[in-house]
Image (cartoon, rainbow, N blue to C red; front, top):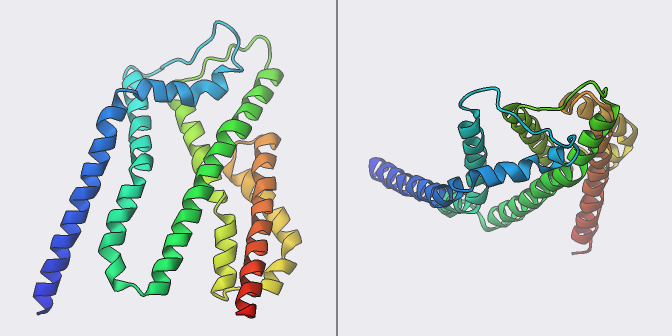
Amino acid sequence: MINQELVINLIELRKRIIYILIGLLIVFIPLFKFANQLYDILAKPLLRYMPVGTQLIATDITSPFFVPLKLALLCTFVISLPNTVYQIWQYTAPAMFRHEKRMIIVTFICVTILFALGIGFCYYVVLPVIFKFIGNIKSSDILMMTDIGKYADFVLDLFLVFGICFQTPIIVFLIIYFNLVNYVKIKKLRPYIFVGCFIIAAILTPPDVISQTLLAIPLYLLYELGLLISLIIKNRDATL
């Protein structure tokens, strides 16, 4: 009986993995044709502030192929994520209780929205400010010609940092919701959290004051948002 259940689970797992791979292929095949256009979009915040006549360069022979390919693969993963999550959900949901399903669905939606907001904030606010600042303070004798691979790594790392840091409200809410830390106690930690946000920003961002501030301030505001959401949920539960 146990072996039969194991075999059924393995067959179901294999089916879900195949569906995930099919979803990835369906997205990647057409997306690969536009890999260079995707990189052009990624490079816009820098190109806008580069001197006229300069451009991004490739210091490695294979970079013009592999860097856009890497970007296309990352975009494929993000775009096909709903299908990936759905297949994982179909495999794990039967073993969950109703309230657990509801919690996971709401959490996933919030995580996705906040991660997208983090990337958008980084792309439209942080990157232009950083590149404008660098372009203004650099010596006139320095010609900005950045390698495409290093630029892509720099920007994607920042996307990841801001996407993760924008999960702060969810983290704060879950900590309070599961009584890991009392609401009153975590509220009293505000001065330490404020300083901690700047320390985290100094560790995760490039070594300049602007990018550190642009991460630290939203990070603290997101902490406050987490407190506000926790208070609303707490008051709502108390009235039920």
